Length: 68
Image (cartoon, rainbow, N blue to C red):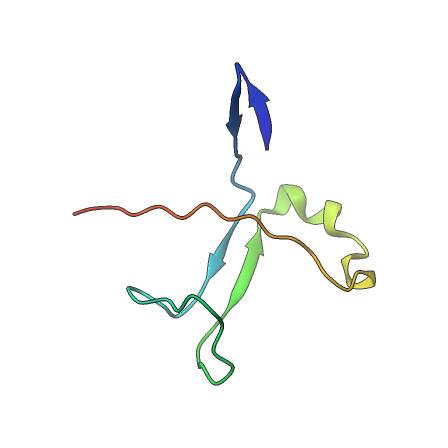
């Protein structure tokens, strides 16, 4: 994330995969089945070294819709 000309811009560094297509819940459901993961681009993996030492991490996502 960086600021340019008063605008905050985000740079994509990975993707989040879930089994949801249309109706994702607002809160997690413990019993949900499927693959849930965050895939970080290789260029940023080194920056995650020792991540397991943390109790919490913050993940910011930008959600958009593609209208067909």
